[in-house]
Length: 172
Image (tube, helix red, strand yellow):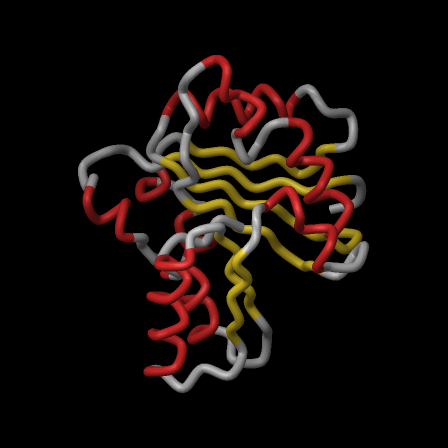
């Protein structure tokens, strides 16, 4: 979701050719970059969707998605933008509706404010399960879960501690 330039979409597709990956973003120039890389790498298991995340349920059936990766989403630091954070309650409900039972959501960010907000939202939900958290991904046992794929933003802001969490809904 909000795949940006598609670094994770492409990286995961290369690592797991037997699985399909769809990057979603509202900005066409970002998707163009990712789709160009997919073509150059002859990846047939990658697709990109230009749409707002709020429309996700229009494109995916209930339970159709195995994993959702939120990599370096806009932190939306202003109070009036809290509802636009990709980990706000309305987005979490959308993710829950399209995730398969046992599916997981992953958040990777360098923004402490967004991370703390996300933790609070997730911990406040009775249906959130299997929460794993680190405030320093690259000095953590969870590092291998991210396959050392780095986004452009992560490369740009090297030196910032990367926060990461993983959780599911219901059975995990």
